[in-house]
Length: 565
Image (cartoon, rainbow, N blue to C red; front, side):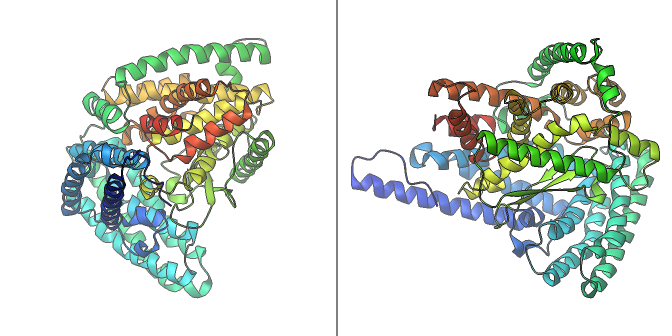
């Protein structure tokens, strides 16, 4: 249901004109989203729009250029809309669309599709995986859709062969994509058919085997390309600043972001030293955390069970304290990470329930080691997910972090906010959730508190590393060393993390940046209410109001929640 027109009117004619303007905006949004869904069928499936389940994105050069031109035209159309003719919520929707189109334009200008080889892997692998994750249709229909997508994988990979430019492709990202392609081949050939009943396996097995052959061939192509790959993964300071200013709507640039992070590091290290002294009798916090990492699960499944137990505890704590409201029927399952993601993602992750479906079940993915990992690598992966570190991660991914936020956002009636969002809010909220739960007393063991401080320090270090990498002021090796110095992670995890930062400019800075902005907005909201963080009702109203507005750029989220202060 759309919120009624909010501007005061002095005569019936103005009301009629206002209603017509709102209808025109709604029609424009419907046209825009319809085109967007058709151009991004894999995302559309993720959103729960099952009509697109059999299709893959067009990743030819012509497809990228067509979308670029269309986005520029849409930007002009939405830019021409004045706020006077729109409701409060529609103004936010317009500004969200414009921010998203700015973000897209900046990355399009950089031509990611000529630089990043995983551009041609992700639609096919994610597109098939998501079908069986959510199972929104009868299995026989899912199999037909999956077969269609599997049959489209060779053409997507051929587009990659045609589009990638050796002088633009970073060798570092080639190695990463080669591992992902080989893991994807194992997934489509051996693991995918096991997801369905025996009678439905033959077509999936045949299509999966053909896709696996294409994926292995693509991996070989990338390996042959490697000696000629001389591209730079650095995004550049100007583009980085443009994302912060024009897409994230923040008032800081990359250098200011980095300086603020360095200041946070000083305070967090002091907090960690004080905690280490209290726990171990000395202030070498790094040694204390590395020693605590030895208290680790012995198997990946034991790690999953540990996360599952703390996810349940966090949910129960929130219910007991009344710090948030819970949507009906929400649930969060804790599962092994998808096999094809394991070579490239070394940390926990989350997949929300499809926004346009009835499902309220989210999926918290635990970072299982990749296929073929050595015993030493497995042990180090498990140390990076030690028992004392699990509580804060469970909070971050599930309650009241990503899962709770996104099931609340799903209740928002705006279709625009179900499609578009920003990691600066999503990841900022999840880190805020960790801190808020510490303030509320959830971590009743000093070891857990230390790891929450360390999790925040890790996010501050990410900002220093990400900005420095993409401004060309830090090498990959220097970044790995910096992360090891400012966290308890093991070297394989640090290498995987830094490689991810190189492939995804500006995202690593989103966690602490968003968290600090949310804390600022909270202070403003509580002040307007004449309340403090001990006022449970005011805190719940803030949490519900902020997350229920969607996953908005910080300035828009502030506008939305302060209207309810």
